[in-house]
Figure 1 (spheres, rainbow, N blue to C red):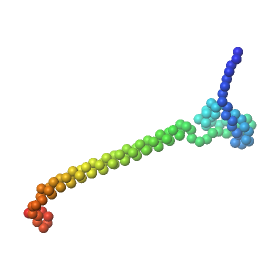
Figure 2: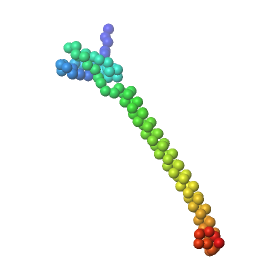
Figure 3: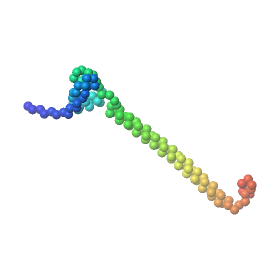
Figure 4: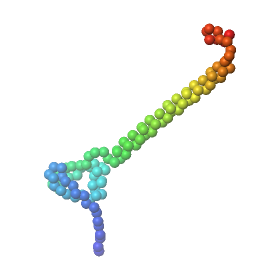
Length: 114
């Protein structure tokens, strides 16, 4: 009976003694994901450190969510400013209409129609 097996090996170097050894690709991925300690052939303990992929994605998601919230706040502020400007423009239209109507009429010194 013949069994064919192939696996990619990745070379590693011990951080203590410098011995070169190999881990299968799948086992290295497992060690990186779990950050569990392992040993070189001479028994020196080591492990992968740094953020896990899941943590990196969570940080990126949080950052993107904060950015979306920031854009929403800016949109609401711009919308509110737009509403205020529209109300001001409508008020000014009324003032202009009253001024056009009052044109040619006499005013007292205090600015009131006589």
